[in-house]
Length: 226
Image 1 (cartoon, rainbow, N blue to C red):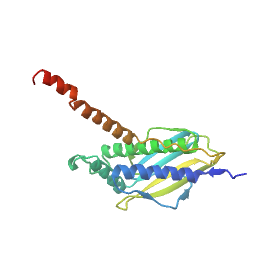
Image 2 (cartoon, helix red, strand yellow):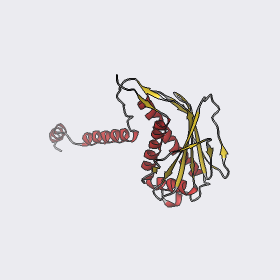
Image 3 (cartoon, rainbow, N blue to C red):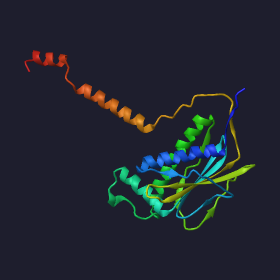
Image 4 (cartoon, rainbow, N blue to C red):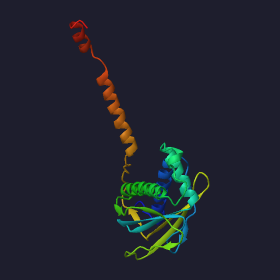
């Protein structure tokens, strides 16, 4: 009899961390990494300078908080805007700007979407979440999950940007284990950017073929003496 594989809180946290690094590295064009050591904490908090929280429900219940220093937020925000081709004059220079909060909130939304997709394919369960909202804060704010969690666990992971600025991710969820009863194939979600690029290339190819003159067109023009 083969031993069943058990997926614990730490494995789920690792999946979430991979979503953070993949999305932010792609968006900023710089490498984002995280510590191999994770902290056990007793409570989750939003901390200065920019924080965001997301509630999960469904296959499991949890709370995710990201805490950015102003330096880390501005580095990721600035790199993302430049990567999108925005001129320097249109890039905000203060972490208190609404544009910074909006962009960072959108990036967090992409992270959450990537994570829920991985959970669906890897754990064969589904979770839903609220819309992430980034906000600039100047005081520590404690947040708890108002749900029935019998044995809540909390973890904190340290992330590092390309310029060695620091930000943190905190996860609180009920202690749970997913036990793999039998092997199954993991279907990777298709990258929307890849689909869009392929569709655009296909349309351009069709347009180019339609614009090419055919032999029939040449014969017809010759008959007209043109």
